[in-house]
Length: 75
Image (cartoon, rainbow, N blue to C red; front, side, top):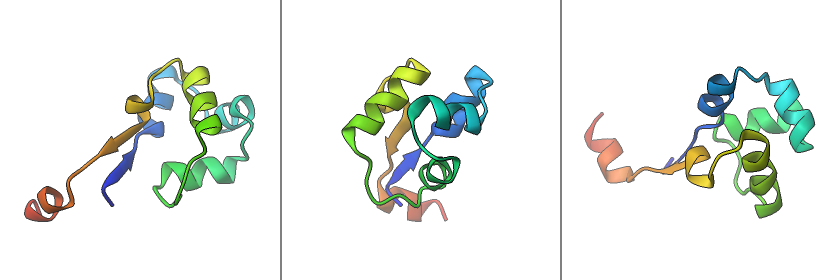
């Protein structure tokens, strides 16, 4: 998948649990898991904004684009 979700990295930096994060953002823990595991097909800007506000970070800290061609070349 060309978009890597790095929510787990930001949560670990802040020693914040998924449950606390979910509550503060206004998501269910299962929806956070869908995002963390890269299974989400879309993210609303309002949700992205809430995640950035809670984690005090930029969208680029949570999402990273990876070129699929480069990714397959490393396999």
